[in-house]
Length: 283
Ligand SMILES: [Zn+2]
Image (cartoon, rainbow, N blue to C red):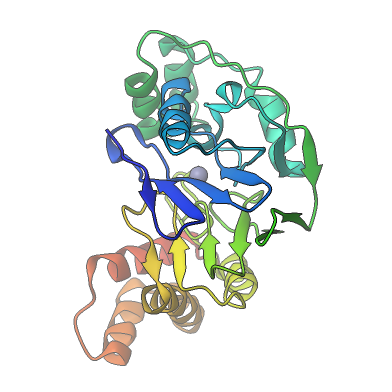
């Protein structure tokens, strides 16, 4: 079972759980108000988070959603508080409200190519036999950006989009130099071949790299990244985008030059990143 972690006296998080695709859930505790980040992938995930916060006498005032994907929103009904999301996330949740999550409905969507096989499996594993998902409408929908003042802490939200999900927002807490990225740095998984595209990746990086962050949360990374790790991930996306353009999507040429730049063999993440850019290359 995931245990609540504390990285400062104001920032808490529940680590992810790969087996059923549970993402990181965050809590930002100001002097006056507390914000939660994402609702989890089920009622039980949300309840686990809320109960561990309660043990520490933390009561939340607002919930912010990073994007619409199931694993970030299925716990919404347990969150008895105003819900804030991007306007596109709001629209996507309206769509999700129409869907059934029973085996046959999920299998049909997988077959039609509109649901990801590993998500369907994770949904079945996480929810068991209770597939009733009640998704309330978010209460507040914004475009561009928004700030929440928590008392001694600011919660800066900005829409950044990206290949993973075009509604993605990030949450930055300047006083703590903490950045919650949701899934925005991951590839587009709702595609036949998982991919990054050059222009979208560049625009995303440009929006994100301006944040001065010492601790960076990616929702499915076990531990947050430090500044150096974050910068090298950003640099990898930039370099690979550049080389994909230069070598016109030629897998081997990109990998070879990237390896030359780094003066070593590529690691697993680098090989995967090259593959995703090649998949997204359209000339
Ligand atoms: Zn996602």
